[in-house]
Length: 276
Image: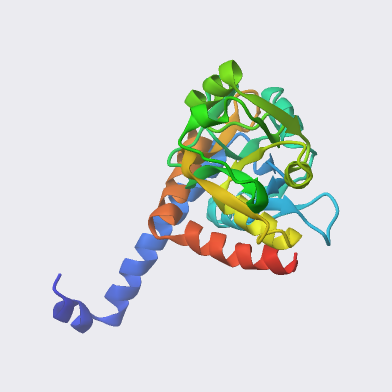
């Protein structure tokens, strides 16, 4: 129907058209809900991952950030509730995911080990670059992974930066794992380690919040660039094909229209000023 003919159509016809579309969409959502294994998803993720995810300073036990907001925009139209819980360190989150004690991991790089117990949702919500962070007073020449072989690094326990780098690090590098990234940066500042491995986005906002952004620099080239995914634990009772398909469809729309990047920018500012 042309635009002019559509405008001239009787009001009752237009109302009928929109009502029909609404009923079709509503019926599809209702049908999907009936096939969902549960109506509430218990979610957790890395609590050291601003502006995507971090521990609320105002509500104990709650994680806030761009990812919880994104989850609401994914889940609400599907009739799902999400409970984003702070259950401890990133290592603990991974253990509970492997045991099926949570229903969704809110952000994980894809590795062979994790694929054994996680079903990843496509597309990735965002792609992240990981850098070698060093104190400005102790910069060194970095030309790639081999430049780290005679140095000592630090990052979060059980952190991954892509399967290829993880394997290289296992064989050739000396990297300590600690519970908080603040500890990593303070160890580097004190000279206890030579560098910190951490994502560029997260490093920028974390250092700004700590008041250390003028004291550290990210060396180039980047260590890796990896997609960050939502993932359903295989042992979660909520995980089935209908759930994953509906979730992926909503996620893809929000990624395609730029909503994820809008939320990252918005919550980056909120983290810097400590408003949550």
